[in-house]
Image (cartoon, rainbow, N blue to C red; front, side):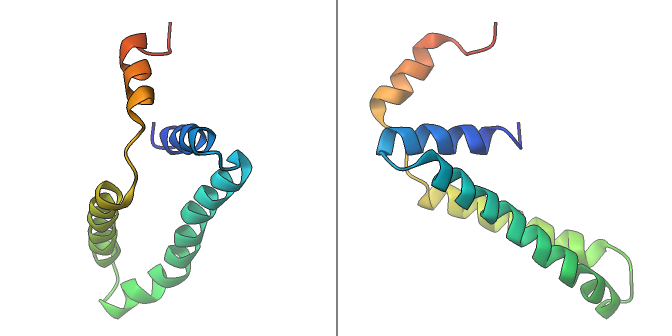
Amino acid sequence: ITYSIPFALASIFSATSGAGQGLSLGVLNLAIVIPQMIVSILNGPWDALFGGGNLPAFVVGAVAALASGILSVILLPSPPPDLAKSVGTSGGGFH
């Protein structure tokens, strides 16, 4: 779910808003990859700064997850009403 839902939502929103799906998915991919690269570069020195161990990195990850969750609820657009109705009445896509 973590890997598929964001890409599915980006496809749906880009299709309904008239934006290009390739561009939207590329931006989403960059939004995932760039933080991963930053974490991989800074995690070692960050852990060494606090005497080793992974606890400081986990705390930073927890704070970042909380901040991203709050920002996503505040900043992301809501789905159009007609899309919400069609998804709600279909009963799901897996059979």
